[in-house]
Image 1 (tube, rainbow, N blue to C red):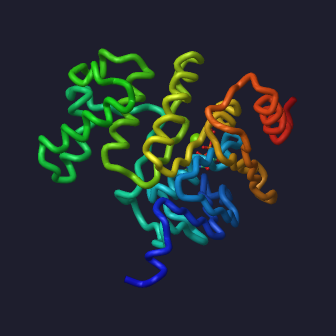
Image 2: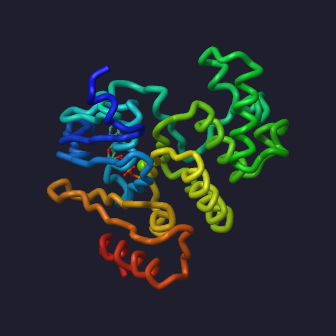
Image 3: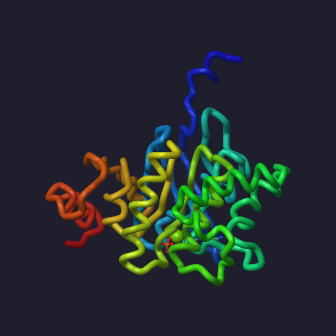
Length: 257
Ligand SMILES: Nc1ncnc2c1ncn2[C@@H]1O[C@H](COP(=O)(O)OP(=O)(O)OP(=O)(O)O)[C@@H](O)[C@H]1O
Ligand SMILES: [Mg+2]
């Protein structure tokens, strides 16, 4: 094995000169332009930005669901082309299979990959316990609340032991109280699983609660993306003065007060 392969750590993402545009009704729309960013192994990077600024596009390129038209993404030194088992994606809606139980839904991905049922279910049970749903393994999706369903989605993503967890507004559809509980859960899971997390959110408080760094994508493509370090100890306290100052700083980035 080459020396370089020994020195590269897991879950390290390198985005180089990444550009992506779409053509809508004959007009070319530049969505991402010359983006450069290194995501550290084990980091929690939160992507924020106005609607249409390219957050989902960036996440889809990282997932390999979308190809860039300039530059590229390397994960642990390998160029991303297509989806891979090193990454798992969590969308806003968990998209569970209604005819399978929680256990069946969580084990499904492993069974599809050829894992034998007993091993898949054992791993699935661990992940279900990790998201706090141990008592609901035999429930069906229709018997769950929105927050519980989203936890199942997170458990399903974790079963395959991804190096990188990609989340697109995973808590966007939840009520305010459930959202706060789920943010705490995500912070715990992230630290316990030691996974690199890249998450899109509109919620600035959520960004400050979870992120090591917040990437703000510009709406106007002439401008550069901004990176803000969130230098706060964990667990974070929303009412603390430094937390509130970060909130003000992010609001200012969006031209708000
Ligand atoms: N498949 C596609 N085909 C054409 N245009 C697209 C496609 N996907 C996204 N776009 C365009 O790219 C731009 C960025 O979209 P994207 O979904 O990445 O934004 P976003 O930052 O995630 O927004 P939101 O906060 O509303 O989810 C939008 O102007 C959108 O119209
Ligand atoms: Mg989006």
